Image (cartoon, rainbow, N blue to C red; front, side):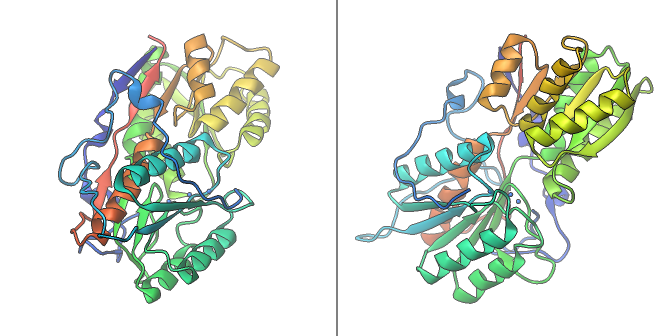
Length: 354
């Protein structure tokens, strides 16, 4: 198997600006995504950073993830709260593991919370409000809903608690404040997967796109990257594009229906690995295993195993571990009085069999 470093680490600040957004670093910012509340402590080493072409920790360049400065206040541990979309999706589990590693290195207390109902905006708001009431020093948030989370951000602002936005950009056009935004470049990651897929298709064939949650900025960016790439090739045709809400079961059902309507499909581009694995099951159920190329994003363990087995064509490591690590480290830097950049980008890598 091979992990190939992509140019997704290149930071283009203008591409991540959301009109009217306010960040503590004085710049404009962008978007984010999370099961039952759980408190964590021990650091977990990332399995993926052992790969030869992946960095052990994110690159330390200005404007990129990696500047840590992890000293804490004398005789006092900072209390940092990470709120994710859920803890069932391997991507968010990887974020948790990266955050735990950073907390152990920095010597801070970390609490990891997620809604009991996966991706529930209402429960995320409640968890954030509870954390504010308990006196957390900083919040690191992966919002399930970029707009819906705003009341919780405003509550943190009113309480004077800094909030780090990770993975999905929060809509700050109404005036709420985030300190910085940390993420991968979803558009660029999608382009890298789509370009590799086109190469494997010999630049021709019908393609289905499985979209993430409707309206989620991460899904919008991924689908845009895929569509823009496929549009460059006249013999590559997107014959269907439909949401499966990041969900494996939903992707299975959607794919079965789309395959029936489009029997000549050559490839399926899924916006995450959970949907890719659901599509893989549907293709098998339809008796078309080995006839349709399927791609995903996130580099979940089962997706990587499928790539190694030759049943999944491509996945992309979106470095959830690195996103969680940097979220906590940037919170520590801020609490120590350091100035943050408005945005930080975490590297991504293609994962293919060859």
